[in-house]
Length: 95
Image (cartoon, rainbow, N blue to C red; front, side):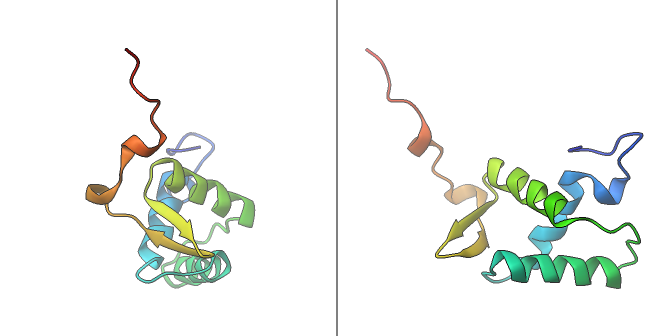
């Protein structure tokens, strides 16, 4: 699912769809706006295989797990890798 397989075409792999989502996030967007932009982008760029909203959400979840997007005030934005604070969710050190 994350990468292409025998049953998942390269343009439908979650990482590929996640990259397509990231391309659309040149400005903060709502989830609905991002969904519409991804659908339009796929149509304009000759991706004939449609993706469902559920598949779009899985790709968005993948980006969130990779800390590449955040949802703040109902808007999706890309995160910069150099600005991610990985310590915020880490367990405190034990002594």
